[in-house]
Length: 551
Ligand code: FBP
Image (cartoon, rainbow, N blue to C red; front, side, top):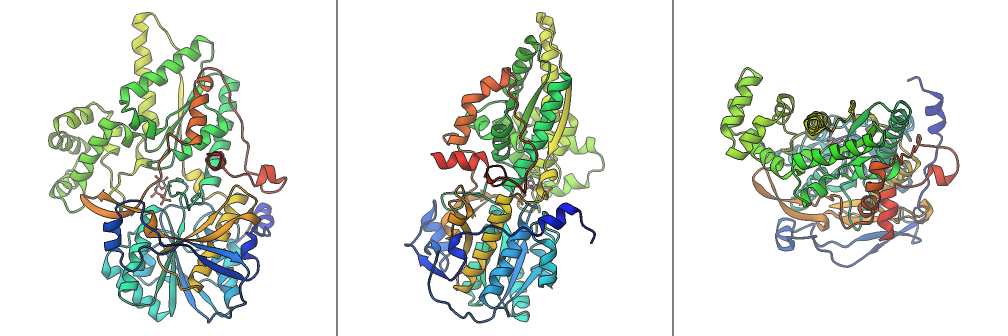
C-alpha cells in the first residue's frame, strides 16, 4: 500500500493515555445500578446483566498473570474516525495482558460473526492502521444482531476459534444489541463475554457516564473547516446563500457543534423545532425573513446549517413518516404492493391513497423528489434513511417561493443559492488527537473489562476535557442506559438516544448568539484539524464537550 508523507508521519503518533492505564491496574466496583427508566421491565428482560456496578480502573494493584485468551471484534454501523485506534488499543491491551492473546476481526460488520467470516488481526495488520480513519481494517455493516439463530451461529464460531469475548464497536442500536447478546450468552452459560464501545459521529450516544461517542470530534472539525471555507467564499463573492445539510441522523449535535465553531447566519436545531411544534412553513418564513433582513443591509449572502434529521422533527412530517414507516415496514402487505408497482407515479398515487387525510394532503404537496425520497428503503432498524432526503433543497425551494411571494407587497429580495450535504466527507477522516487518544483508551479499557470477566458493559473514558493523562477509564453496564421504546410497532429495551438538550449550556450558548449571527456577518473560520503543534490547537475537545462540562 503506497502512503502519503502525512500517513507515514501520523502512523508514528503514540496516543496519549490516562495515567491509570500506564502500569498495573486495579479494578474498583461501585454500587448496584438501575436503568434510566422502566427499571422493572428492563430488570425482567436482563436477569443476568441488570444492576451490575459501574467500574473504574485505577493505577496500582498486583501484577496479575492473566491466562491467554482469544477475542473477536466487530465494527458495526456507519464509519467514525478512530475505529482503527479502538482496535489497536484493544490489540495492545490484550498483548500486554498476555502476549499469547489473539484478536480476530469479523468481516463486514455483525454479519461476519453470523457467516463466520473473519481474519486474525496480527501485529503486521494492526500496525498498518494505527491513527488512520476508516473502518477498512475489517469493514463494517448494518446487519442487526437480534435473533437467537444469529447468536447461536456466533457461539459456533467463538467455540471454534476459542474466543472468550466479543467487542462490538457501534452506536446506540448496536450497543443495545450487544447487551441483548451478552444477556443471551450469559443465560445459555456459553462463557462468551460481550463488551461494547461507544461509536458514532452523530454524538447521540452519550450520558452522565459516556461523555462522547468517538468520531464526533473529528467529523465536526472536518465539517466546520469546510463550512468556514464556504463562509469565506460567500463573504468574498457576496453572491450566494449556502444551505448546508449536516449528517447526524435524528440528533442535531453535529449542526450545533459546527454552529458554535463557525457562527453561521442560520442553524436549525431539530429538537427545538419539535419542542416549539414548528411547521415547515414557519421554518421557511424564519429563514426567508433572515435572508430579507440581510439583503436590506446589502448582505445578499449567507450560510444556513440544516440538520439531517430535521424532517422527522417537524410535527406534521413526523406523523407522515410514522405512517409511511408502518405502510412500508418489512413483511407488511402494503409494503409488498408498493414495491411491486412499476413507476414512481404509481407509487406516489398508492401512498397518497393509503395515508390518513392530513398526511395524504401534506405528502401530495411535497416536491415529487422529496416525496419519493421519503419512501426509499428503511434501514435495518426500520428508520427512514434521513441522509437520503434532500431537506436542504426542499428549504431552498420553499424559501425561494416565499421570497417571490413578497414581490407583490413591493419587497424584492435577491436570493441565489447553493446546496451542500456534508456527511461522508467526515466519517473516515484521519482521527484528531482527541479521537486517536480517546479511541485507543476505549480499546485498551475493553481488554481490561474482558480480563476481569465482565460482560454487558460498554467501555468508558471520562473526564475528557482534562489532559488525557487525567482521564478516568472504566466500564458502564449497558442496561443502565436503557429504557423501553416503541420500535417497529413493539415495545423494546433500547439505549436511550441523547438528543440536543435545550436546557444544556451548548444550546443556550448558541441561542444567546444566533440573532446577532443571523444579521451581522460574524463568521469564524476554524481551519483544518492540526495534528502537530501546541496542545491548545491540537488537543482541544469539541465546544459541546467543553460547554457541557461547565454546567
Ligand atoms: P451510525 O449511527 O451507525 O454511526 O451512523 C451514522 C451515520 O453517519 C448517520 O449520521 C447517517 O444518517 C447514516 O450513518 C448514514 O448511513 P449509511 O452509511 O448507511 O449511508
